[in-house]
Image (cartoon, rainbow, N blue to C red):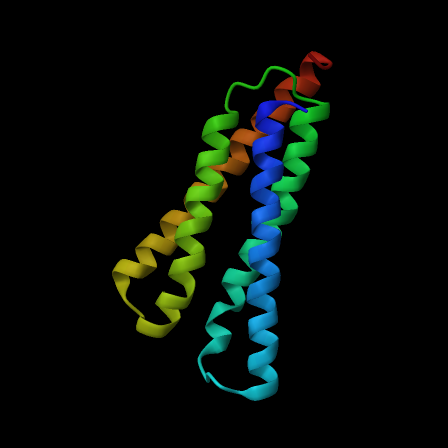
Length: 133
């Protein structure tokens, strides 16, 4: 497995663990009701599991099996994970405070994730167009 595929896969496993813990805490709150604001983290949990775990697992597989000479892989990883960090922390903070500054950080996180996705699509499309590397 290539070094970058390993990086994506290890990062995905970290997000899987984090997402399962966040989900378990939310389910305990549904049962015990110890925090009326616990539902502010639902969006973050979805980001962690869908973009953090699932998407990066698939990216690891495609970087390992399909893309043999990646050009943008480091930037893709940095954009995805930087954007995830901003949205994971920012979404609950935005729900609690309503601050424009926090809202801007969440929006920046979404743009970084989108940029990472576009770079990944460009990399895979380039490889497919060439007929593999």
